[in-house]
Image 1 (tube, rainbow, N blue to C red):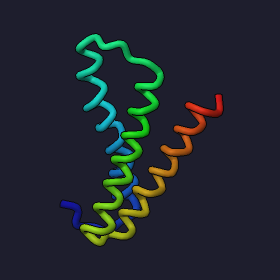
Image 2: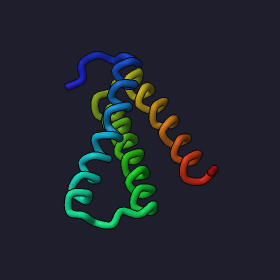
Image 3: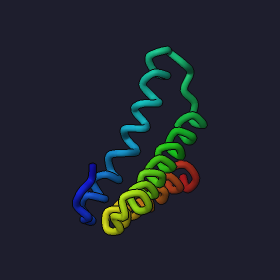
Length: 90
């Protein structure tokens, strides 16, 4: 479990959760040879951002680690901004 309440811990945790969720969902679909569309990747990116927010909620409400939760929030906001830029601004 997380025992230290540091901003850096939250940043690292926030950077790790979305790629892990992405790989867990993407790899089984890719190995089956499913046709992966742009809508699939958009939904998968949103799901990754959601699970990062869920991790933040668990850390802040379950473990009462506010600084770690703030670190996850900062990374989550960065992911959300990159999502909007990549899928809607181009």
